[in-house]
Picture 1 (tube, rainbow, N blue to C red):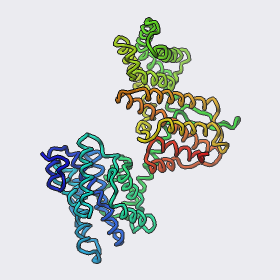
Picture 2: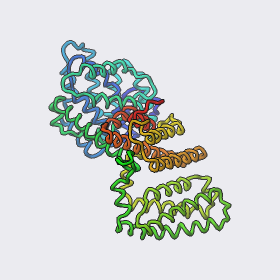
Picture 3: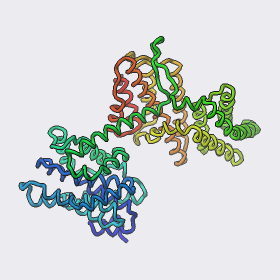
Picture 4: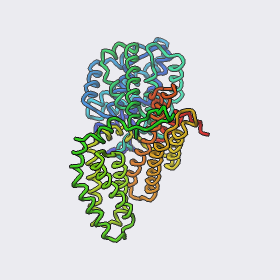
Length: 532
């Protein structure tokens, strides 16, 4: 059996891949072929040539590595059937390109084509060819096989390579060539532009911050007729797709806010208003009646749990807080019956606090086996109740669930950034915009204080699964503050005639690496904060 440490050429890689799933072969081929792209691109761009098939092949292979759907396989099959990618790259070079360079560029184009084959044929042969030909095209074969080893180790450990830099932590031997390509695309682009997408796409691969897979899939599935027509036709189509996608994502992102804002002309301040989609769920008589009917069983179980916990005589550490928030849920249900209006946000907030307690090992240990099980069941029932009746509101927050705090970030420093967002909202960006009414700003303060408690709880947790769950919850809650600050900035600027494009903030955030802290910094910049 071939070990990863034995992989040193095409034959040994193919032997190792025989025992691996197709997904592994696709990842290896895609990344190996992509590493050589700057060498190929610099030669063609210096020659004044452009060649879409190699770019299309690499895009297809990277999309296939992320998610190999039937549509992607069909597109790969269509590309293979054409079978002209490598030859076109070879013969379009001008005569002054010397023969050794010509062979190297042919190898790179062939590697890209083999990467597409790997998405269709479930064996390691084409993947090994892609890696072997890409490596042989360069003078950095040792570096090539070293990073292929790292790719294999990641995949063998069932870890995704999607967010792993193309060269891992190793120096990029192609960096000079890539710098030359990016400078030419920026300052003196060849015909057939715009080329912005291709530059951003490849930089994302290099950095381990890839573009949205939904967008990349749409581009990869553009009809072959348009690809065959060349860059003059397909690149403008791609540019419009990117712009449309960013507008849609910006709308989704900034819809995931705790509330919207409107300008109160009498008081000269911004006021928070419920979002229409949520408001309908709050007081619609039919929906409210259905919710309260389904909540009866939960209410009975919660009352019984609180009584059982009270019977323990308060000996359970944290028991008082659990009872307080469980009673807050019960009070909210009673209030809804009385006033015919349910404050969904409060219900979700109290449920979130109970859920955080339900995964803390020290709390469950104190409750013991008799009380911990009904506690967890009640929390799960509350979550299920909210999911069933307020799916629309939860779906609105879905874009925020992908936010993750940067690996090296200190949670307290990240929280401080988002506290500054609230401070800027409260002050109207130091007087440049209408301030947010104090009552509404206090709601944001309450959310920040809740996050503060969750971070303290995270520091006391030791179980890895518990910590991961708590970290996701913290990231989600912090992201809500950021999205809300972004919408305030947009609405407040509109109120004073300074409206801007929300898509601009999304684009800058993507270029910063799409992390949670980067998102907060981008919102602060949008508010005009200079760090003072």
